[in-house]
Length: 333
Image (cartoon, rainbow, N blue to C red; front, side, top):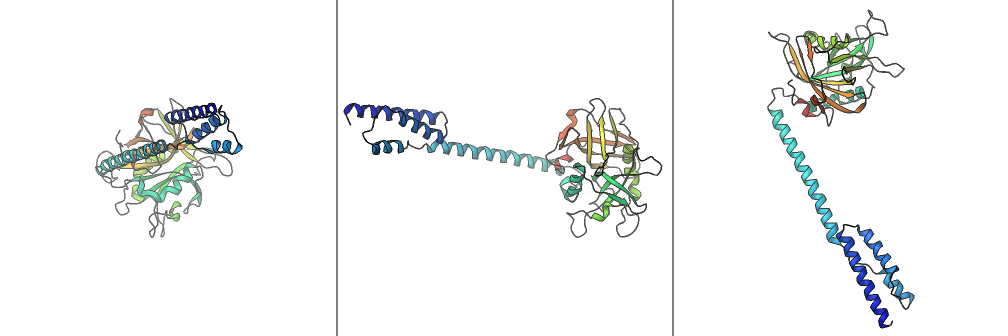
């Protein structure tokens, strides 16, 4: 190799190293750096004297940039730690808020309702029966939370669309309700027998004295009622077809949006045996007809037969899960 060839080879290698450092400083991927190296060598003006020398030059590798990969990994780990810290702070803040509430029950305590709520949300609620009348119906939504029965704190109420002999089939159904209970031997699973209404026997689950508490809410959907300010209307959507299921809904009169009720969290209530104003308050958990894959919550209060539900997007909360404990927070209008 002549002196001129050696000079051109040194210049080419120096240019390659400068190009490599520029790629690293600009955040280029390691793969791109190697490709740039191969291209620089292939287009170099230096001419090797033999095929063996050419292969050796093409196979040479630039110095690896380990500091770039290390920096990215450290940065990624730092971001992950920051996210975990923020999540831990939010969880701790939620726990402090929950500890201040008089009602010890939480939505996460009702995991035994999860399969039923999922089926309601997917318009696939099971068919249920009133064993006294043999009439069949469809579960619309569940109410859980502050249980009116001091003898059975962990139970819920299912509101069900049932046919009425006094109404035509095409008209609104009657909304009936009864108790749902978890299994005695496995409190994380629903006692399937309580999906059906039993007036007597081992699975007796009719509402009894608590009927006074829940009847006004059932009547609101049965009679297609409205809120006291007329901004929201209620009803039961009767779907048709072999696999059709009824759904309870709330319509926002102003916007035309339809909310499909999935369940209701009852945070506080007045005993039917107590004196004074009768009330229930909590959160409505629902889907939007336009986006059924998400769950939302909105505060409500039912007082002396009047339902108060603030309208507007600012009173709506998007939920991370259908049984998230944050539902308990902010149940006062």
